[in-house]
Image 1: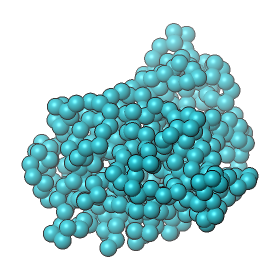
Image 2: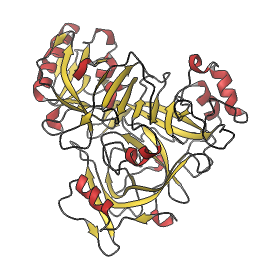
Image 3: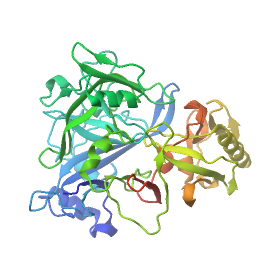
Image 4: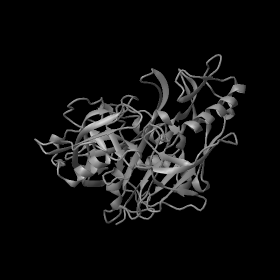
Length: 483
């Protein structure tokens, strides 16, 4: 049977009933909604927060999936809606359905429970910073964790007990996984091929092993940041949804992190980069077409999805070649040109990594300098002057009164043009944001902050844009207004 995991919102126009009818259907016995097998609630929490090392306010987005079963087919197997696809409804926290079901629930830390009940599991908003989270269950009995969806990472990991050196607080992302309590847990031995494969991919200089217990070790860092994860390579049961009605992978390979410095309070991440041990590569054999797609919403009233497997072809969709970045496992595109207010910057075509786990978009220094000068010239008539409080690797502006900016329509239009004519036209609030301390800033940064020559397309500039990584076809697509 072909299996495609698809996380998608329901809209009235597509499914033929309104919010009230759909909300009611969740209160009754499970009824047929395209024969879905799992319901996922997508909760987005938006808040102005302080971020280290500067105590400043940023928009924070948290997308939380809460799994709940709906009707299966008469055979007990999932019924597909698109070439084997399973569809999952997702809702923003402010959606009437979410408010109806969460209004009578108790906030608190995640505990092991029947996930068929939509329960608000978030106690505070400080769980993550610009990342999109999904739930996984690890071990036997299962432990529920919220992890980041990261196309820029290969090895998946969660924090594990005992935290030998450092574990950050993750009470609102589930309890820290304790492998000693899992009946299905196993270590990866130092002589196993999996150990050598992971260590080689992570470019470890020497064989890392705890010989006393025959445990393969790993160490991974996240470019341009102080984030890292160090621990043991292990296997255990991974489940999405309930074991009886969800999907279980008995020997999922991942990192059991014993020393972690990673963003804020999420439990870890699931990686989608091109390595045999990534989350995507371990799940991909279950589907008939090697591809994944997602759309992260920017508006709380909009919709989004994440899918693994085949996808519907749309005649109006344009594609650009997808390839692996040079000497890296991340997927990349060829950026041909950057255009600001119709003015094409003088750029050298070069690769750009697509990274859902990174909020900034980095450009080569020459391109960044031209972008800086062009945007600065465009904003001067609006009364905004270039400021350098944040340094020269970021582009920020301030006005005489340092007021909250609201005239988004007056901001320069930015376009990123990729090979084969595909263009990503950025909405003003996808390329600019107002920072409480630094004023009006762009989401662009200089590549030198990450390492010279590394260009990255971050997740803020692709909000509400459908993205498809067609691995089998070697192509990539943007779909504007997809969620």
